[in-house]
Amino acid sequence: MRMVKHIVMFKLKDKTPDNVDSLVNALEGMVGKIDSLRFLEVGRDFKESERSFDVVLTTHFDDREGLESYARHPVHQPVIQLAREICHPTVVVDYEI
Image (cartoon, rainbow, N blue to C red; front, side):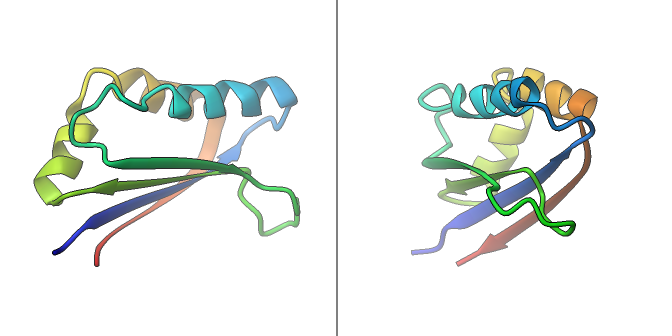
């Protein structure tokens, strides 16, 4: 059985505890609200090296269509908007296993 993984790393423009909490809460707030979303994990970086990103999102979907459905989902849209406002850059990788 194939699975799609979608991983996003976020670097905050202004890394304050409030900004980190806002992003983490928005990401975790999607749990149980998007049918195609099978797994969601959010991590906060503790190393804080020059190369580090601040927050990582790992999600799993049954297939590419599930990922596309998630990308367009109304619950996901405000999370995207928040990330665009408080983060730069972000990096993404999507792959099948």
